[in-house]
Image (cartoon, rainbow, N blue to C red; front, side, top):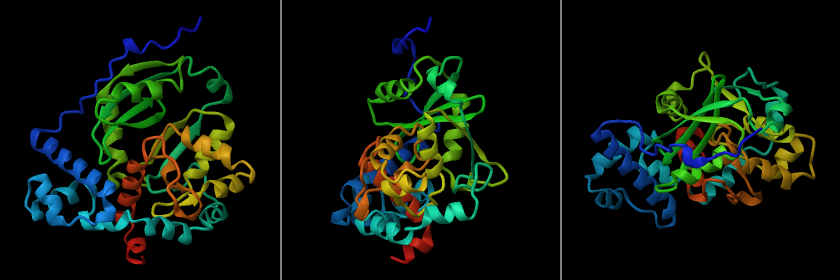
Amino acid sequence: MTRALDLSKLSANPEPISIGEEAAGNYTVVKRTLERITTDWRDQPSLEQLAKEAGLQPIQLQRVFSRWAGLTPKQFLQAITLDYAKAMLRASESVLDTSFEVGLSGSSRLHDLFVTHEAMTPGDYRNRGAGLTLAYGFHPSPFGQVLIMTTDKGLAGLGFADPGQEEDALADMCGRWPAARFQPDREATAAYARRVFDPAKWRQDQPLNIVMIGTDFEIRVWQTLLKIPMGQATTYSNVAASIGSPKASRAVGTAVGHNPLSFVVPCHRVLAKGGKLGGYHWGLTRKRAILGWECGLSQPVLESL
């Protein structure tokens, strides 16, 4: 008999892995600065303003921010303007068609993380995760605390947890596979957290293995999302057309929202028509922050705006 998942028996372990007092302080500064820019980008806050709020000299903030986020505060501010979202769509109207034309597949360079993937069988999904054991842990990331879930075959879950909401994030992710067994193990998940958010570790000769656990339709949508390159975006209707279901935009939106591998399977790169952000399971502020971070790493795209 399958027992219902009892979250009271799970330890969320919300504290991040030990990263040293100085590094932890830097992470907090960067997180707050990201939030400030993402929330108030219309006010175009200056480096001096941001530094004063962080209690640092401008050069100190620039150095710390660049080390953690991979771009300067000014680059990040440029990247998250609404015009950039529109420019991404204008530049990528045929991005999915191009991906299919060049024959991208699960063993190819699907996107910047050099992901290889496999999908659980429909039977595995219908069994609601029975027989699966997933290790999980909470870790720091440029976009707030991240919840990582892994199986023996690779990364199976990635979600975000705002302060004080770790238990809710854990319940959300565990509820996707209620019959699975969940084991807290930050040591096992730490390497994934470091690798996913470090572009220096996105290597074609060492692909990131991910496991997709969903319905057939959801997996088709998620596989399509993997074909959207960094610095580009598409729309729900384009995704629907690319999987041969042009009238299924709403169903595509639901599948995008159910994506259990946030960031890695880039559901944040799907926008509404006209460049509006649309929805995002982990919050629109975070979606804009991720798009801005990616824009900063895509210099040719940024410079063309």
